[in-house]
Length: 379
Image (cartoon, rainbow, N blue to C red; front, side, top):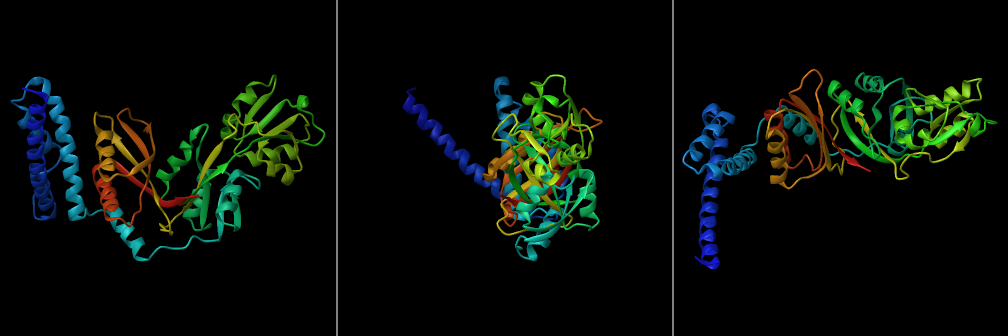
């Protein structure tokens, strides 16, 4: 048989498959709309597994795994299509519909904001850019920032979530799981670290340096080049600057923002000591209530998935089917278990789209744990 004849036969089979696919999807949509059906008899992993076993029973052994991949995709698209037609009920849909009913809000110009550290912290710089008129309250750690927002002591909290050089701030992600708060705005802030000390201190006099762990990690190359200098981790870069100001020892220095030099009367010994000159930290603003501000076009979620073959692929297929662009996908093992992973997803989408609400509802229903982190705009 010639290549042209083979192509004609394959085209004919493809046409048949397409026709049958349409019929199957229509039936899936009808099944999804039938609220009286017994869910256990019509969908779920056991039914899907039985279907794969049945259709592959008489196939050549070498084709069975390929057929399983085909049917896994078929099941995923059928569920998505059925959900789009029926509207999957869920608590996240109820939450989003309630927020959407209030209409899109204008992002506030002024606010009371919680930040970790003291004046001069990078979080304060990010807060100033997001809220031009602000009253900032400072707290010892990130957990306290979340607590201040939850208790209503502050309207919003500003925290770092990711750095271009050292990656995600996992402690903040963990706190997002612990506390019920939502991301409402994000900003990428260029971070330039400065080595500073008391006036009159020369670089060769420095025997001890204080800073936050993230800043230390971002300046590792510079610090490795120093000899006989002790590096100490403190809770915040601005706290480090204040410690140097208050220390009677002229052999101490800090790594902090340039603004700390003016605030605490310090001398810049070395500017721009970060490993990468293009060093950005992504900060988020959080609130205890869900707000949907105008132009919000990004969504962040966290899900727990079992440590088994295909669990992540099933989720990714849902995004691919809807043509949604994933801008971040990161995983980390959950504590106290070897069999479960947490996945962080950032993707471009609007929550007022029905297909997006259906996707979130599906994920909430199907995942071991689902956390909606927020719908926001990144500036």
